[in-house]
Image (cartoon, rainbow, N blue to C red; front, side, top):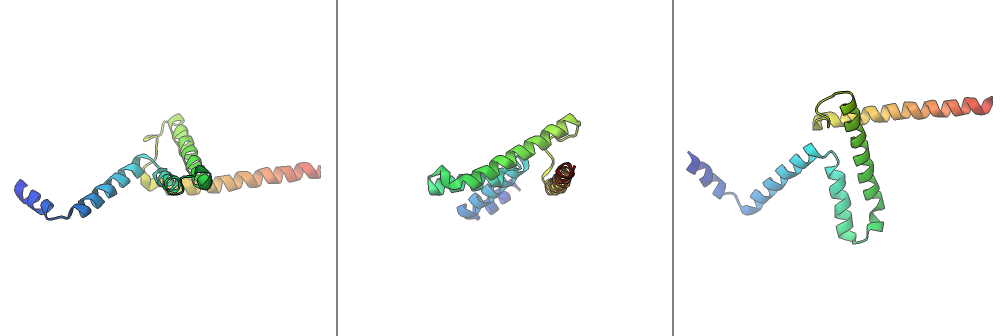
Length: 119
């Protein structure tokens, strides 16, 4: 049986094997690093332009992503939630909830400032 598997594997072009390997590696990276896409974008920009100043938005986006997930991880550790870094399938919902809560907080702060200026 093992030889059949090797026979099938040897019929696959090397380019396809490399593509599959890279896909698996990318998926593993995304599971362990929620900012892997932002990292790749930032690095691609820097390598293509050779000037870091031209990639300030990409670099800032990567830093913001790292900071966000660091805070999420820290919060989950404090609350005893495991895994400390949420699984990939939960991350979009966590980002959505953060945006909703952030808008509420900003609205509250603005309303409080408005009340203070009227007083």
